[in-house]
Amino acid sequence: MTKYRSQSWLGRKDKSGFIARSWLKNQGLPNDVFDGRPVIGICNTWSELTPCNAHLRDLAEQVKMGVLEAGGVAFEFPVMSLGEALMKPTTMLFRNLASMDVEESIRGNPIDGVVLLTNCDKTTPSCLMGAASVDLPTLVVSGGPMLNGKYQGKDIGSGTDLWKFSEDLRAGVITQTAFDEVENSMSRSPGACNTMGTASTLACMVEALGLSLPGSAAIPAVDAARRRNARLSGRRIVEMVEENLCLSHILTRQAFENAIKVNAAIGGSTNFILHLLAIAGRIEVPLTLEDFDHLSQHIPLLANLKPSGAFLMEDFYYAGGVPAVIGQLLDRLHGAARQCNGKTLTENYQHAPILNPQVIASHEQAFGEDAGTIVLKGNLCVDGAVIKPSAATPQLLNHRARAVVFEDIEDYNRRINDPDLDVRPEDILVLKGAGPQGYPGMPEVGNFGLPLKMLQQGIRDMVRISDGRMSGTAFGTIVLHVSPESTVGGTLALVRNGDLIELNCRERRLTLHVSDEELARRKAQWQPVLPDYPRGYANLYIRTVQQAHTGADLNFLPGKSGSDIKREPH
Ligand code: FES
Ligand code: MG
Image (cartoon, rainbow, N blue to C red; front, side, top):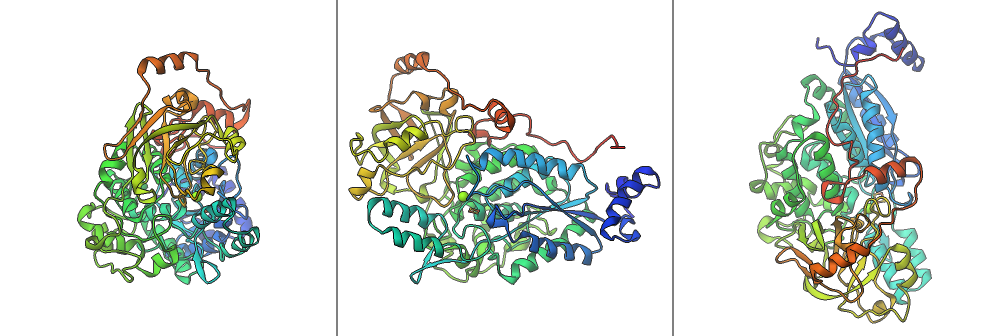
């Protein structure tokens, strides 16, 4: 029998072995569970403060049964959970912290393989980043989306419809009473946002990477198939330990390329870019911001899902889900990429049917021609910026206008409803101070609302530019992730009211039409203002976080430390 790493805790006949076994036995474990069978960690981001993950204890029980059925033993453990709906100033500030929790919890314990239970946006990348730095056999079980929201007989989607209703409320188009009713109608069951927001995007990413069982990404949280998937994942992780199928055997450059193409086809969230870059950094696969542009060029939009389209995740599941999308893209993907069930991508997906062509299109009848992310370069974003054309107003993708500048979010909040604000419908709105260091944590404020004056004139989209992120559920002509950010002295810091800005998506350029001499003069007068965090994790974060174009990990976290530990605790 192979000797797994857990045996260096549990298989010893000395004081250390006594301690490890004896204390675990207080949970009623019999002797034979320590006989060298695979020990599976169930890494759970369950929390009642992360409502999207509140049902993960139930799924953990299913995983545990699967592990037992396959002859392993399972231990569930909690890690830091990050809930988008509640955490201030932004969960992104804590993604890297949570990843450290995951990494050390896995490495420091007698675990041979791990199942990551994730759902809400940051819980997926934080778990994967941490697990990648240890590199054991690893499977992901996502929690699945909520049922479709229903308001007055119509489907409403998490986030996406909230942004619409909230602008309608500001513009006086709907009443407060109607707005309150929507609040009761949007979140109808356990699970993640039911739009193709970041959580569902990342569940699809995980499946496309080959890290969850085929067909699992879109199963609604409350569907029995979701529990069955958890059960089967528990069985499979035991085999993966027996096969020594580690994370790095699946997370190859080919797998990352597949995920980028699938993300384009589903109209996935821009947050995908940051998280995939950070995961690649941990597993030591070279990946750059530019890869997202050239790999996703000419990938058609195949999913008609909010925020880019009309339907919701429940519809996506019934229409065939990720398998149907991958089935259409097979000629464009690396079919030989190995996946967690031991099969190749082609073997897993070649016969996947489209069950509803209104929701999932064939390659020949795509919903859009070029769905991928556009990576912009230019003097306003020397290291890059991104825009999601499938969520934008096509006529604004190539646009030249004067800048209306907000120095930070407080300045924005003070002036956005001001009837005297000097703004015209064709202007470009600029928000500074929303980057990783500046906020801190790079919040989802990039889809900041339009000036009240504009809403009242019926305007519903304007070009917006910032160093922040936007919610995966958001839409609009929104340039994000400007790098370097304003707080570290990127050109964004130097933009002034009335400057001419040119967004040129055709040529992938973002230009501030101000001379180099003038920019140098402004730079000489510029003073950095770091947010005031004299102590604690936020202080460490501000000092060590990297810029958006590399994934915004802390500078000491990329790479792996493996699973070996030399010293004993007692
Ligand atoms: Fe948790 Fe959207 S708020 S998935
Ligand atoms: Mg989100």
